[in-house]
Figure 1 (cartoon, one colour):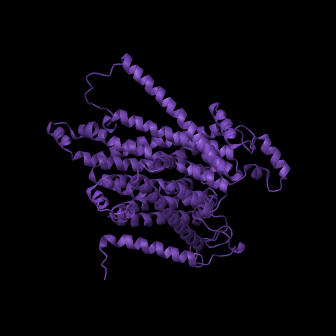
Figure 2: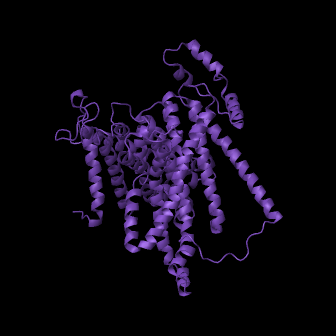
Figure 3: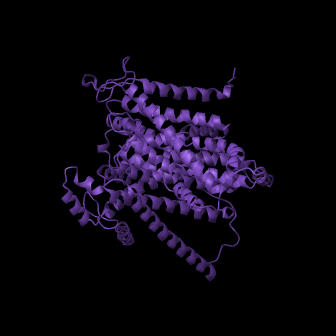
Length: 260
Length: 324
């Protein structure tokens, strides 16, 4: 049986929490609007209170968190895949066609605050979860690309890579057996650190009204609505903010655990 | 703390003609770079918005507009010209600081953008100053308070900055609204701006403090600090004259890293505190699909960001020649 050391406990707790949220959030049944029970404070039936349309806040938060987690993970995966492929290519074949262009794009995308651009583009394309994440993946690939390029640059001249090449392995085999095992872990760990930022970014977009359209619950819109009712219904603002913070913290704990 | 009893450098740099000339050429190069960047950023943004599969004219006129009306307005605003000619016209306008007219108000966007920009700059500048002064003050407190206070401070900083800056801004902003005054409309503009600045400052202040404290700890163990001790300098003098100076290097680098999060954070903070800065303008133009307005906000934002970045790069290069 695998032993879990005491240091790893928070990490596994965080993983369990996220998995539980994902399953609960996708299985939970959302309330229909019920105008007889609007703005109800937390009770046994609705343990996070109800919102301005009488829907339970707890179930909505769980669904929102699950949606956000799933979509963020997919956007992250897409961004890392694009980044590793492009960054690796530009560094492994520096003189080849397009490599210089890729390098240039990496610098441009890496140094520009793309939140504004993303907001503008998503606004023009129309709000929606898919649009937001496609645009996000298209700008977030630069960080992993930069890191992969830097690592491959360094590795390309090391003896074991040169030896593999001189044995007559094909470029694909060199990548598969010499480069990929060295590059994969640091790049994945480093880019995992961006995941909380993606979650926050998702909340920010929804805050802007650019997330999934209502009635789909999003944490960002719940926060925005909570601000409007802050003086009469504290639960509308407290729980979304707390859950958002908890989500980001849980991801951070996992990232730090895997970096050790 | 503030007084620095360190010895003055023996010979100050004297401005010689050659030095002046190199300074002038550096200035000219910086101006050229700025102009080049403006051209690149503006045309990139223009093309980006132009290539999007959405028709701003149709959106402006609404779903019930006739094809004829759409064609007429498109012609009126010059949207029926070929792409390159429109890009040329746009860039000529940018050279005259004319970023086109809003599709909604039909007024030039420059004035609205500038007004909003000033508002945003005010509290972002406030936030930046608070984080600069705050981080150094917290470091000073940690030095005076000793080990226990320092570890407490580090614990607090780590807990807060392990969250994304946006989440911190939302949390602090909401808490501040709840504690100070929920009825935002009663607040005077300045008070709201100060609250926004404070909210925005929390994350950068703590993040900068952490860097100063940790870097200070590392530097205190280096041989040259031990040498200084053996020469009989006081602990306080060693820290502020030598250790602090070397800790400023990662501090400055982090300051420039934080610029991006300030841009994002400012948009959120504006929504929370109902300020009419760039963030609100972006939101309005996004919701009304006012693409000229969006374009100019994006251009202004990106250029500001690049400006801040190159300023910190210049500061780093001049303060720490080794980073050149």
